[in-house]
Image (cartoon, rainbow, N blue to C red; front, side, top):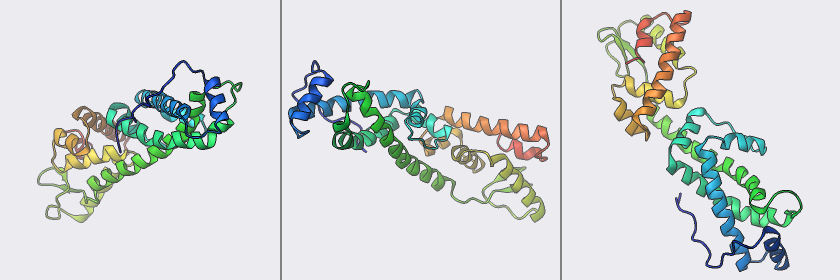
Length: 253
């Protein structure tokens, strides 16, 4: 996806009010005129700034829900969008490339100058619906990359090394191995895909710097995700849900 907004039309009249602009667009039957180009630029610039701002402060999901365009968004993905400007820009471009032409073709003729919304705020309703679709496309790719990193590992416990490993050692005893594998599954049952990816990579012996590079994130984010798993493992151990101390320590390195 591109990461820059289209060049501004050469004839832009910022002093033209919405009512005046709409009247001229109506008179031309919404044909392709300089006035339509003015509106297109206005929508792009407004949407570009507002969408990125809403993504950066994390309010975009709630705004979509209020606009009746809800979608499930794990907090880890919202954090990723809030933190990374390149993702916000890509999502804004994907959203606006569909929202602007769709608004002009289907929504603009229904705008009411006396309805209480100006042309740009009226446009943002359409933009939020398109953002939902843009988010879904991005999330599909993001989750696919995480699944590729996670793969379908077989996590086993090495009695000789005293730790969990993705590299199967000589079988130390199938019953003991199965119990420990199930215990780790309990710890990671409520983990996000991102948290599981971090844990699996650590169990494979990677450093936090290497994990951050593989996941396209920062070491601080890796440590934050690992910390959540540590807290969860500790609570499970304290409550007696898990009984093997070495399992909770496997995510405490």
